[in-house]
Amino acid sequence: MTAYRDRAALTQETGLYQWQIDAAEFVGMLPPPEHEQGWTAEQAQQARALAPRIRQRFGAEKPRGATFCADRLADRLGRRVHPDDIRVLAERGHLDVVGTFTPPDSRWEAHAMFAPAQVDRIEVAAAEAALIARVTKVVDTLSENEACEVLGWTGGQLLIAVYTERIRPNLLGRFTRADVEDLAADVEFRERFPGVFG
Image (cartoon, rainbow, N blue to C red; front, side, top):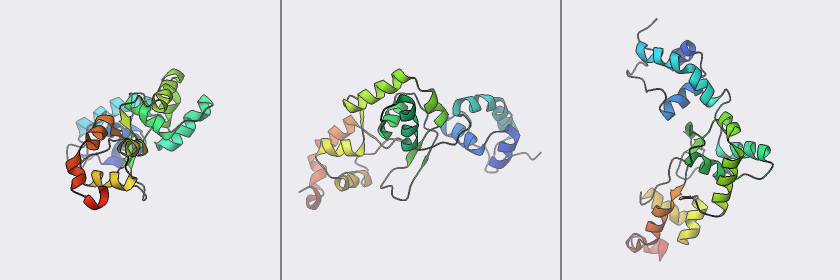
């Protein structure tokens, strides 16, 4: 056995899927490799011990995006679920963000990935509360469209604020309401781009 385990070797040694190792590392269950060649023997031993908990936490189905998970939850609830409802559930601690991907048409942020097994375990009461919170706008974060509505801006104008790092979305692609309200009051920022906000 070599001194260090790369991702493929750790997968074989633990019996986990590679995506399960990736997810466990992403959420902090597994530490990153201590060496450029991979995980140490001690880390591999820790991973073997954690393997049952990793399987239980993330299930056996590969992570998917918010749209897929919203459809999955909708089938169980018997009502429409918006992808932002999945993001709100994650912000409330009912789902882990287990990774990200950046689709070709993404304008600025990577999209969060979720474990379908965790979606299947969400309690109906928690799901209903998240749906109501988003619809009644009592959540502390806003989607891109909601942020634009508060600002009275187009998506392109918001994009300038993101690219100049005046405001940043969180890991779930949402903006804090406080940051949006602060941006709305920032006259100096708008004056920097008279042709855009004039």
